[in-house]
Amino acid sequence: MSRAHFQLKRLVVTGPETLRLRYADGEEFVLDMAPIIRRYPVLRALRSADVFATAKLVDGGRVVRWMGDEDLELAADNLRARAIEQSGKCSHEVVLNWMARHQLTLDDAADALGLSRRMLAYYRSGAKPVPRVVELAMTGWEHEHEAA
Image 1 (cartoon, rainbow, N blue to C red):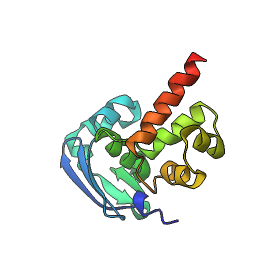
Image 2 (image 1 turned 135 degrees about the horizontal axis):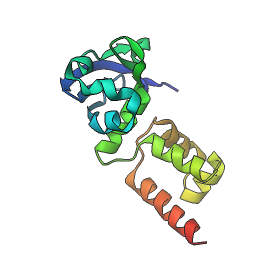
Image 3 (image 1 turned 135 degrees about the vertical axis):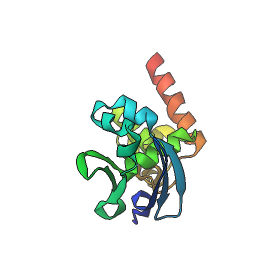
Image 4 (image 1 turned 90 degrees about the horizontal axis):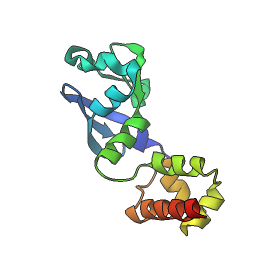
C-alpha cells in the first residue's frame, strides 16, 4: 500500500504558528500549531516566530524539523492527523486510539462497528478518510459499553 498520504511534498510557513502542508496524495491542509506547541513543553522554542520560520522537510518528507534540531521535529502523519481533526473530521489516530483504549483487535473493532476488516484497516492506516458515521459509531459503542 502506498503511504503517499503521509509524505509531505510541500511545506510553507504561513504565520507565526501556522503551516500549509501538501501531501504526496495531493491533499493540502492548513495547520494551526499553537495548540500543539502549548501542549508539549519540548516544543516551547517554536513560540518564537524566528524559530518557527525555520521549518524544513526532512527524511524524504516524513518529518518536519525546526532549526535542524531533532528535539524540534514532528512526523508528517501526526501533523496530518492534527490538521484533519482541526477541520472537524476524524483522523486515523482517533481510530487507532479507540481500538487501543478498548483493547480491540482489528476483527473485534470491525465487528463492533459493522464494517469489513479491510475497510477498517484502510481507516486505521489513514489510507482512506474516516467517515463521520464511523466516528459516531465509535462514540456510540463507547457509551454503550461504559453503561454496561
